Each structure stands twice: as structure tokens, then as C-alpha cells.
Image (cartoon, rainbow, N blue to C red; front, side, top):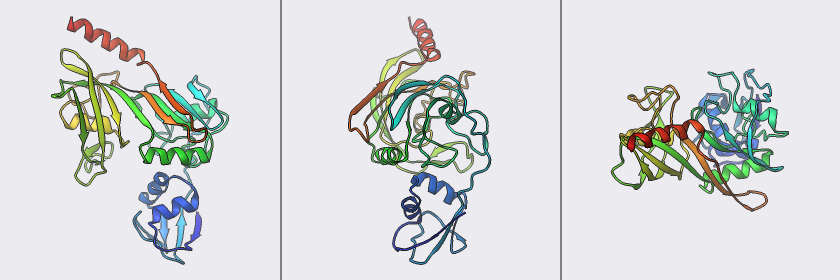
Length: 297
């Protein structure tokens, strides 16, 4: 338990702690939401405005969790002393949690990279952003703390371009478009996200690149990075991601959803070089497209 005596007034609790502890705001907010932060012995929300002489107790203790390095093969697309770009396989959970303590991408990173940032807590070393378990594709991993902080700011300011390829059920009315619908966690099912007027602003741009008998193949660019954003946006409009077991009631395929983070573009936060990475669709995805093309013909 860390004890912090506030020495300046006027900042939100989450902003103040992010600066003082030199960790990410998402990590701080998660601890606050879990009731692991006390101000003058009272649980406060992220928006609480701190005052001089407030005493903050920040519980940074992490439950024992599986952090054993795994030496399973990892596809590293790019690596330098500051960061790595990796191609995550389908069916790999990014980091351990209370509900899952098996092998994750974190274990594989620990076994394949010599260093990882510590800024996002013990159970998320190097993790700057995430992909769902059933989503394959590109992820940026931070190898040291300053790079992690810079990448987090770039994500917040929408300076990292992320492009996905998705197969969706049905045919979209317009071949190109922008979906702007606020997203928050579902009130009735904590595993799901939902469209809600009180949610966070969420923007998804799409373009149909191929159409089949009952499905569209779409290229998707995210302006924001909410949890399950692509899946929630298309599902709400009536065009859920093909095979999505959570949001597609009529199409829970055994192999899961057809969604791949296939392209990343950003300026390297340290070297200032323009970085562009692109990976081909995984084999299971290509096989499905070949099958659909045969039906079309």
C-alpha cells in the first residue's frame, strides 16, 4: 500500500495519481474502480478533486498470478531497444486477470523479449493496447517505461492508425461510412459492451472491399479504441462480425470471429521514423474467404 500526501490542489484524482506514480491513467482508473484507492480513508471516484494535505492510500498489491515465461514461438514483426511490434495469434488472451490465470501473451512476451516496460503494473508488462482473445493481428509492445508513456499519449491523441479486416453478416447499406455511437460496459452483462448515450465517444470508419452471398468483407479504421468497439458497432447496426460468439446470436461458429488487426501506422516515439506494418490474413480467415468465393461463383 503506497501512502501519498497531496502537495497541490485542483487536479482530478486519476490525473494526480498518474503523474505522481508515473503509471498509465487506465491502470490508475482500474484501481480506483476496484476500490483500491482511499482518500482520507474514504473510497473516491476518479473525478474527485484532490486538495493539499489529502492522504491517498494506493493499493498496488497484485494477487499472485501466473507470470512464468513461456518460450512458445512469437512472431516478432519489428524490434528495437524501445519497442516491438508482434503478430498475435488467434485464441491468445493478452494478459492474465482475476478470471484467467493460464498462459497469456504476457507469458510469451516474457519468454521472447529481454525487457518489457513496467508502467502498466506487474501483470501487464509491455502492454500498451490490447486485442480480444479471438482477434489476431498486430500489437505494439513497449520495452521500457518512457516509450510506454509516449505510446500511451499517442493512442490517446489518435496518432496510431489501426486498420482491421472484418467479415460481417449481411450487406451494409452504404459501401463506405462512419459509425459514431457511444460505448460503455453493458449494465446486465459485464462481459459485454453496449451502445449507451452515457458511454464514451466511439468512432469507426469502414469500407466494403468485397461482398459475398450473405456477407461483406470490410476494412475498418478506428479513431477510438474502446473495448470490443468494432464488434459492438456492427452488431448494433444489425451486421455482427461473422462467427462472433458474444455479439452474433445466429452465428456462433466453433472457430470464433473473423477479425484481424492487419495494419499499423505510427511515428516512432523515440526515433521519429515513420513506421508502417502490415500482415496477411491468417490461414483460417483466408480459407473462409476462398470458401465464400466458391459459393459466390
